[in-house]
Amino acid sequence: MSPPSVTVYTNHPFRAAHVGSLLRPKPLYKKRQELEAGKCDGLSLKDVENEAIKHVLKLQQNVGIKLVTDGELRRGYFFDGVFEKLEGMTYVPNRTLFSTSSLYPNTQGLLYSLGPISAFKGKVRRTQPFYVDDFKFLKSLVAPEV
Image (cartoon, rainbow, N blue to C red; front, side):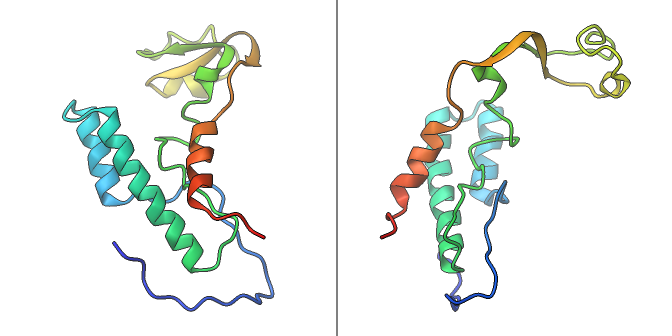
């Protein structure tokens, strides 16, 4: 997958940066499906994630974006991996419609969304850093500016 040829303008009358998720390339999307189906392991997923991150990095660099992102390609949601690093949270994997009403009093909207959630169980405190390994990987791919 070579990126398209693009003319890079360096004297913009504006600044541009991207924050947040980028679309997952098809090979990454397919590998995640394989992982969920038990057809591969996390190590082979990581190899595909690494290649996808290199690809989106090159896309950003080719259009002149200096403040780059990994596109959150290692995450399913932008907050994946956050709650697990917080004290005072509990994971509720198989939530039923009304099972968490005591965890979220006066929040009727949450009663209607099913699925796993993280819920408060006490005072919240960060116990581990977020996304440090992801940052180190991306940093290793970018030459330092002089």
